[in-house]
Image (cartoon, rainbow, N blue to C red):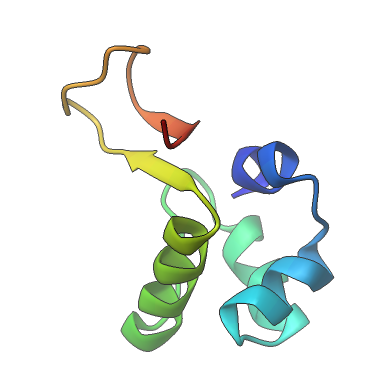
Length: 75
């Protein structure tokens, strides 16, 4: 999440607004170790917001010309 925010040049508050979530929810999600934790509805909102903002999420083992797991800007 931090990497995606950095790519977009936004802070946690802006990401919360973009995703329609509260700031504490974003803070809790970012505090998760390794795997982002949250309820399904919140995770779907977050993923949708990042997708609409131009972020591609790369799963472990997924095909990616730019490397392994992580986030990339959509091309």
